[in-house]
Image 1 (cartoon, rainbow, N blue to C red):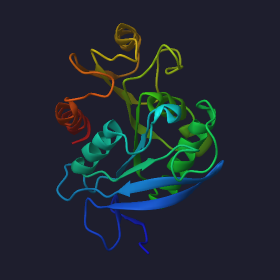
Image 2: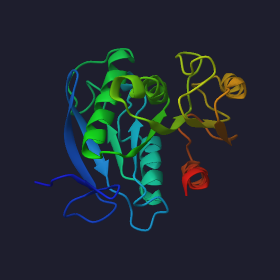
Image 3: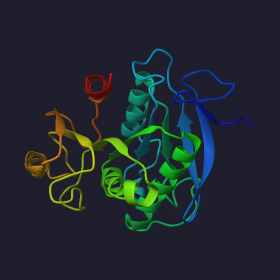
Image 4: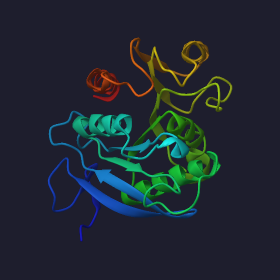
Length: 236
């Protein structure tokens, strides 16, 4: 059995850099299935103490931690030299429990972050979510400091359905934010997202793909390139 350790900002064991390890993490409604992706050697953020957590889209519409937008985010962090944890919300795949309309899912995300922080003491957290997962990540971002005493370094919101969920608090987030949005998103109010971003008082960057749909079909290579460049500019 592989043993997960944390050393100089990287999840490591006997396996090579960039490999993956399936784990079960205790959650509020039972165990949560998760995958640790180790950082690639040579990434510009390697050894700088960053670790990322990624939240997947809606559980009742086929969303899992293996969604292709989620795995694109994972590969982006990995290639930057950042270890990543993605996980299934309660009731999805090997995760115990049942869907809880984003309330319990926020608790799931906090449980994953708490576990990551216990393994990666002193790490700088990068949090991301796609669609429904972005709403969960946004809600969790406001509870990290008060509930867990964890400082969030950066938040990424991909295709956020701002018309259906609460995101900011008085136009602010507890950290800098990157919003990634497709211009032909068929599931999200695109003009509403752009108006919302314009109204934020927090430091925010917007990456637009004007021809991309909700799932960024045919645009994921450019998505990864742009997102990696964004984080390199911020933290590299």
